[in-house]
Length: 84
Image (tube, rainbow, N blue to C red; front, top):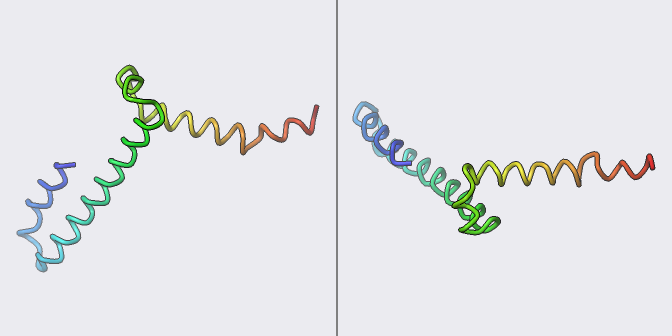
């Protein structure tokens, strides 16, 4: 997240409207930071702190769990009862 701030500080001196560039750059960093915070807090809320410590990639596990649930229960799984 802080690498973006470093890039902004390198690029802004070479821009024509520096005040607008600062506002745009910092708002972009704010959106990225808020999204990062949302993902991390939802991962800890779903799995808990102890489980997050044990998982290698907890955010990917969360995505895999949610996508599988979406496919199975909202996709083709409810339609299987039509064939039985």
